[in-house]
Length: 636
Image 1 (cartoon, one colour):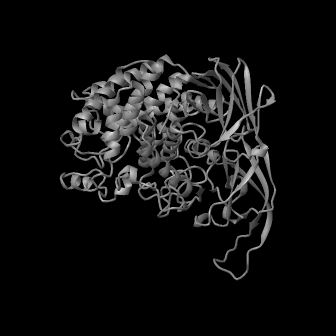
Image 2: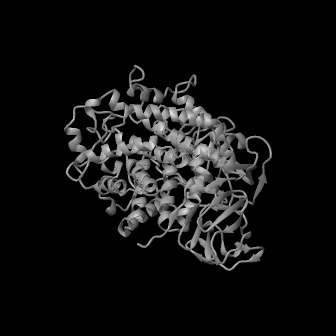
Image 3: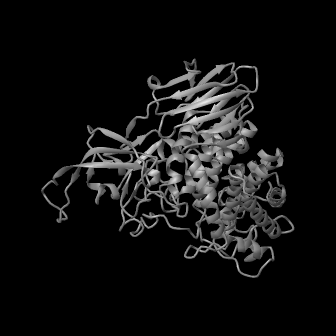
C-alpha cells in the first residue's frame, strides 16, 4: 500500500459556516459550561456525575467514596478534549485557567507508576488490571490520551501530555507478548495512535499494534480472567466474544459485530495503524468491515447499532426504526472511522457516510438548547409505547437533561468543535476537500477560503492562495446522490476541466492567487427505499434532500402517524422556514392520505382514506417542539 496522504490538524482550519458555526457557538457558550457544572454536580435535578470529585478524592485532595459508572473518568477526559477545541474556536482565558486546574487535579490523581483510574484507585486498588472485560481502565486511559493530544495541540501545554506519556509507560510495563491482555472496551488503541500522531514516537504505534493484533488471538482469555477473579462489575458474559470483537483476529473479521461503539473505535484504530504502517492486509480488513456496515447494517440516518440488547449490531438488514438503539457515540465513532479510511484512500463512499452522520444521527442527539441529550436515536417514536414497553424502554421520546452513563454529550461536543479537521487531506500533489463546510484552511499547497450554502444549497466556493508555483489538484468530493448531468464545476467563472475518480472531481492546474473554483448542483428531493430484506420498512418511503433525512412529527400532522400514506405519484414541495425552532431550515410538504381510525380492533371493512397535507421536517431537529410521535419511514 502506497500512501502519501496527510491528515490536517484542527489549527489549520477555522470554521465560518452558516450551519456549523451556530452549532459551535452553542457548544462553546452553553454545552461546555453546562457540562462543566454537571461534572461538578451543580445542576439541580440532573443525574449526579461526581466525576471531578472522583479525581480530587483519588488525588488525596478531599475525603469521600467513588461514585458513578466504572468509566466515569472518561466524561472528564472527553470534556477536556472538547475544551481544547473550544479554546481554538473561541479563546477563553477563564475556561483555559479552569481546564488547567482540572489537569492539575488529574496529574495529582495519577499514581507513581503512571496508573490513572479513579475507580480502582479509590475503590478497589487490589483489583487493578484484573478485570479487563468490564473494568474500562484502558478505555478511560485511551480517552485521557486523546484529551492530552488535543489540549497540547491547541495550547502547547505539556502537563497533560506528560500525564498521558507516563500512563502509557505504565500500560507498556504490564502488557507484552508474555503478559497477554486486551481491553473489553476498545479505545486505548485510538489514544495510542493519537499519541503517535502528535509525538511521532513509534513506541505508541507499537503498543497500539499489540492491542489490535492481540484481539481474537486467545478466545479463552476473558473466560479465564473471570474464572481467576472473585469479583464482577457488570457480570458480563465472557463467552459473548462478538460483543467486544474478540471472536477472531482483526484481519479475519468480515462482518461488523457486537457492541457498535466498541466496534467502530477498534476499526478506526485499525485504519489509523494501517495508514501509519502502510499495511495493505489491515487496510483490506478495514474495507470489508466498513462495507459490512454500509451495505447491511446502517440506518437511513447513518445510525448504527440497531439492537437495544447489548447496544449492538444485529443480524444483517435487521434495522427496526421503533426499537433502534443507534447510540449517539456509535455514529460519532463511525464519523471517526470514515475519516480514518479517507486518511488512507480518498473514496466518495467514506465522505458520503461521514456527511450522512454529521447532518443527521449525531446532532439529533442534542436538543437545540444544548442542555438535553439523546443516548438513543430512534427513527420512530410512539409516546405511551416508546420508553415504556418491554423491548422499547431504551427508546425515549424526549431528550433527558443528563445520564448516569453520560458518554454521548461530551463526545458530541468534541466532534462538533473539531469538525474542521474532518474536511481535508493532502498528498504530494493534491488537496482533498471532503465536506462542503465554510471555513478558512491553511494547507501546505494553498490557503483556501470556503464559502458554502450546504446543506440547504448545493453550492460551494473555494478561493485559493497558492503557496507553490507547481501545478496541483484540488479534489472536491461530489456527494454520491449528485448526477453527472446536473453537476457544474467552474474555475474563475469558466467551465473547468476535471476528472472524476472515486467520487471526487480532480481539478489539476497551476493555481494563481485569487483563483476561485465553484461547485453547484440542484438539491432535489429524493424518495428513498430500503431493500425488502429490511422487513420493518417494506412498503414505506423515506425522504431526503441533499444530505438531510426528513421525518414527520405529530405536532405537524396530528395523531396516529402510522395512518398517513404518501402516494408514489404525489408531488413534494419545499419551504424555507424563517420563524420558530425550524427557522433556517428547509421543510417539505406533500399531498397525502390518512386512513380513518376505528373503534373496532378488527373489521371486515377497509378503512376509508381522506386527503391530507403532510409536513416533513429535518430529522436532526425532531423532538424540539414538544412530546409527540415521530416517524422517518412513511407508508407509501
